[in-house]
Image (tube, rainbow, N blue to C red; front, side, top):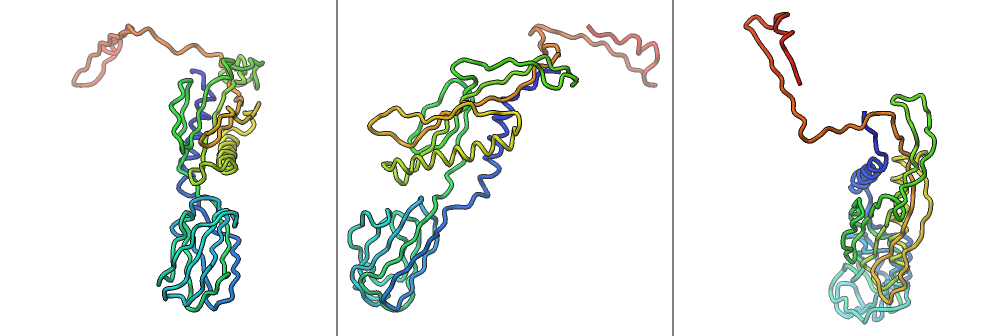
Length: 288
């Protein structure tokens, strides 16, 4: 029986969990809807096709009129009213997808008055399942991507070699390796590349999801030794990265090393008769 290596098993389990859950995670949603109006039209908001990020949206009428006829002018803010778009003409439309938000605004029949507004927040959609790679050779990073890089050890350190746990098992454990591993969690919010709060949020949410997957795969056998931000203090960067050092318990079994020379050969001679095997024929089977 060969040694069962715990770190590759943990890596495979985390990859599988992300893949299994990717299809059932909900897209971004609309919440905290607040409507202030003087006119008779009652707007409604729909997460259609899908919110583009975690936004604080304000849609405000600057020139009123009757819905469905030309003359209505509006503006949009995606940062809670700090900055605004230029004036935009509604025309004869009774619904529109607000630019940069991925959210549809429907306007009921009636009138809109200057100052009428709709305010709401959105949650960000879950990005694609992160790419996960294992090994020392780090692949090139792509701006806007989300990935998890697993590196064995911590600066070359394998980890602590400790006495065996549960020594009465079969095969008998000779030692327990608290094997170290380093994980780089890289994420970005492409909807707001200059917003460091958005980049922080993307990386922290990826960390939470990763830690949950690790907990469910190896509860009681892993430990997080350290977690820190990778901050190069550069002028411009895309996304954010967390560097996490953890350990996983691995048993060293009292079992022979399962390996054979590459030139190993086998010769097998067999005999069959129409009546099947005879005792003498069985004795003649040899292997070397």
